[in-house]
Image (cartoon, rainbow over all chains, first blue to last red; front, side, top):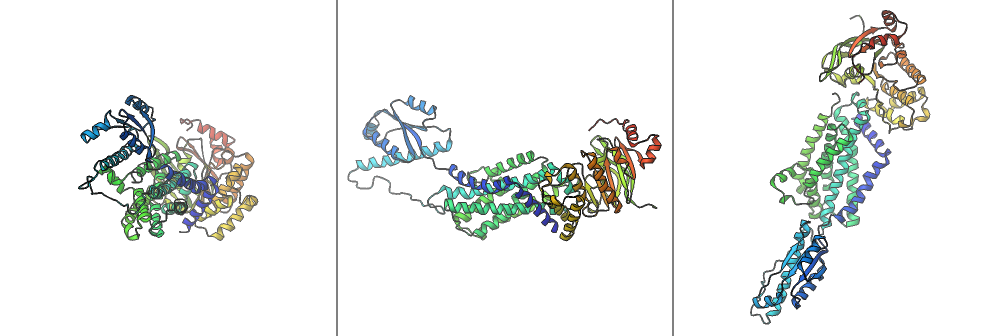
Length: 372
Length: 248
């Protein structure tokens, strides 16, 4: 075991000698945690709407005011010709063109219904579908209001009385930052950890120092463990830093115990650092290691459930998430931070991660060759 | 066996695909001698040395190093040898002392032993003031001498040196060989590859490798007499000219 201590000591000396490493470890996560959650915003605001009015009636004016007053829409233009509206959409100035047919008001009063047409720019699918939904909600509201005005003395309520009120559990204000920040912290920890470990061993291959290691009586598992531990410690430092930022900047205080986060991250880091080391036993140059690690992490991150819900993925992708460590940690972070889950609730996740670490680390040790 | 051999090699061969880098070589190295392993670039010296030190698995043939079979007991061999490769092998981003501490540590030396050894080496190499200087800021010759001293830090009975003096000026080479001689006087067996023929004269015995085969073996004097020439340079040239391998 003394051998391991000497390796750890050497790794730390080397790490702290390089100022870039310290910057990468401390400054980069801080900046990213401050910037990324602001950008990873799911709310759609400032939808540019163009109203093409062929009616010019009081109702249309009312509707226009209603739309313009909504925080989600910005009245971009008010035109007479649908062609002009579409042209603006072509130039990406406008997201939705709402066309109001001639005699809209008249038809509505006479026939009790009238048609409108909305053209939505769906180049950005999320923006389009959310925008259309917001617009529908406003129209529904508008519809109800005018109907209430018509019926002066209702015998019975003309509007349906079944109204669904919902409250959002575990994130009552639907604050997307509470949802994103824990996930982004996981990604940061993963990227820093996997890259550090993947590049480290392969760097020794490039410099040739690995040969001096290989010709020594060092045990393979001593060497891999000696490489794992320093990164494991640095990973916990990054996590701590991230949790502090979440608390200080976003006011996110975990509902569950901090201890269960650290318990899980302890196992998680073993898994992800082991993966990095495994990659570096396959790669011959830092460039190769970078590329492999980038590819693996890219797939894992996209399939992690951070940006898209795992439940709505196709079946095969859901199976992939079963062997995706990132998916487990994103879930656990959200469970503990937002829902206040305890150790008992995350035990199944913990078991899966330990199983993966239990496969990956021995694999890395086995695949690292002291002799070719 | 009357003689005490530290290395016994029998028909050792290494093939990389269709290419035979080391072609059935056989020789013995006696305890306490400086054994010169000569050859042009690409003759197979490094491949041979890597097989003997347990870094490469032989394709066929046998070799015993300090009594252990290289095929089955490579890790036992590693415990008992020192090795200095032609590629510079110290950590450039560690200080002189940190390098000594690390290599001493992984060979299982105790901290006190490491410290005493370190002081001794710094003294001999005249590096006392450079103890806490990064290795990358040392001149090449100093690095090489330091690398050699570190490779024998754990007092191995046998040391492999693979072109230890490559790219070093003549004065430093001379000093380097003084270090080698001192180690030999203390009873260490040294296995040295080189292509400097003046260095061959320092060796007790030399072998000359051409195209993966050993073409000559004996003391420098014997080889000169056999070939009827006056220096090792001439011995080497007359053998190496037979090479069909271009420089690798």
